[in-house]
Figure 1 (cartoon, rainbow, N blue to C red):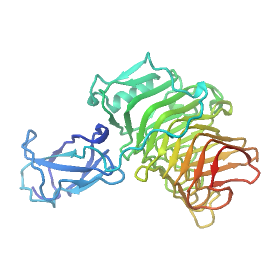
Figure 2 (tube, rainbow, N blue to C red; figure 1 turned 30 degrees about the horizontal axis):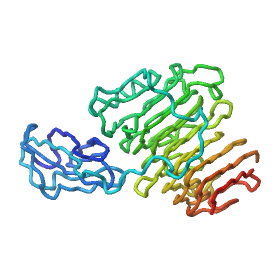
Figure 3 (spheres, rainbow, N blue to C red; figure 1 turned 45 degrees about the horizontal axis):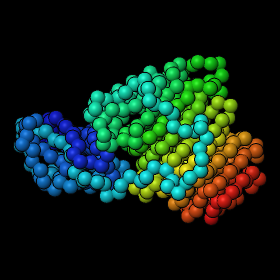
Figure 4 (tube, rainbow, N blue to C red; figure 1 turned 90 degrees about the horizontal axis):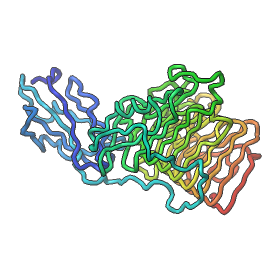
Length: 434
């Protein structure tokens, strides 16, 4: 058939990909450009073709075997120019991930050298009696729609996709409804939730009328509680969401109101807006926790490897306004704050570039780090490791049994790698900051 008027069916399968990750063919243009996402960065993929849905499948045609997967988990190939296609003959394509393990394995979850005790309320929730079990024993049965619908209903959510790791690729965010039971999402250490480089993964906002208002003080209410545990969040992307108000940032997760905690999770290759003075949180952005109580992060990894770091205008790992954090036995590494000009933005700049790992702005806020490693993060403006600005000069930095070192770029430091006002209260115990 002639290039530009291709008539075909596009199929996608996965085979022996690390974590049983399933490819998603996201587009096929009229000029023959096939784009496939949700592949494992650092692996290779084969593009196969057949004139019949049932095969036989032609492999190694015109160099389209062992196509290297990009760092964002995608490939883009021109199947029209790679080999002749007879006019009027329909052609079927499939993409298979073929590396048994990725060239760059997933990092471990949490800091193996962090051993600080964790408060009971920060621990994983009991999921022995789940309200929703997604799947019937195979990865294919654990669909994105089933997950999104379960989150909308609330309650405790688990997965039954077999005994091997697998990935669920989303084409839109799962959204919490504020009038439903508290949410616990437990992946059992096997589930990866992917935004496929195209969407945010999870959203909760007590002040969003579309998710139901439940109190007249939506910015300070005690429900819902949201806990994510034993999960990997990969390739979340909120760049297509407005940076105005509280909409932007949070490439994987965006939360405002109620209570939120993260336990035993990995956040890999998530992105948010590239520029803006206050937008951020390549992995997670949080606002308005009930009565100023902290967000807990326990035994979790943000980045962890050069192939999997987060990237956004500010807060390559996490970002918040008016929120405190208590972080235990976790790792933040290889994340990037890529905006420029800081906050407020310098004249002639778009703003941003602060908080390589962590970005916090507000008034009476506190960052508490226990048994946590922060290293090899990068900024263009301020706070290569941490940007902590308390506008009423009543903020606190507590660092205990932790290491903050080898972070890069930036200025305006009151401690190495940590930017903010020099009168920020400091509680440094048995820690290295350099």
